[in-house]
Image (tube, rainbow, N blue to C red; front, side, top):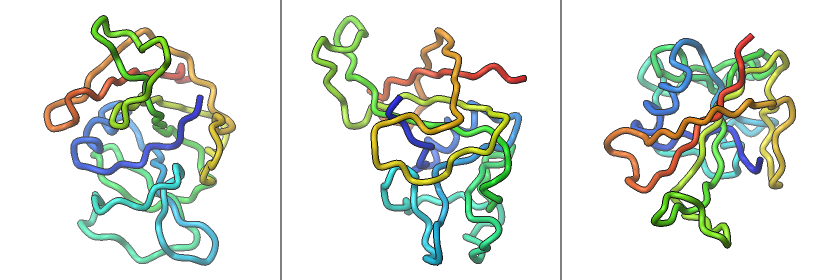
Length: 167
């Protein structure tokens, strides 16, 4: 699929992504690895200036809770990476053309992404992915639903939601 766990970079994106699975906790792409106590995103991008911690500020690093989850209220907290759970992934989306379909040469628009929700019976792979392959344990079932994020997000952000059946 060519996607990564969602790196949330703004309040608008946080609200949109949270709205996809607002009924439960979900993993984001933020975590820290090894002995370096610095958060990174699974897509390789630097950690954003935007943070939305449940207590208002980033908690002290906790080796047992290296991954970032979003709670049912849209706030972030540290979590064990080995837990089961939902995650939202995103990938670049083909640039829409006048008829709303991707162009024949599959041009990419830098600000357009597709979001995908996953809910698995196995722990999520939280390692950064440097290739263009689908992360293990992700088996989405597509729904024919196209949604645009709300006000404040990029106006040409083309979003397609693919949900996995929740058991």
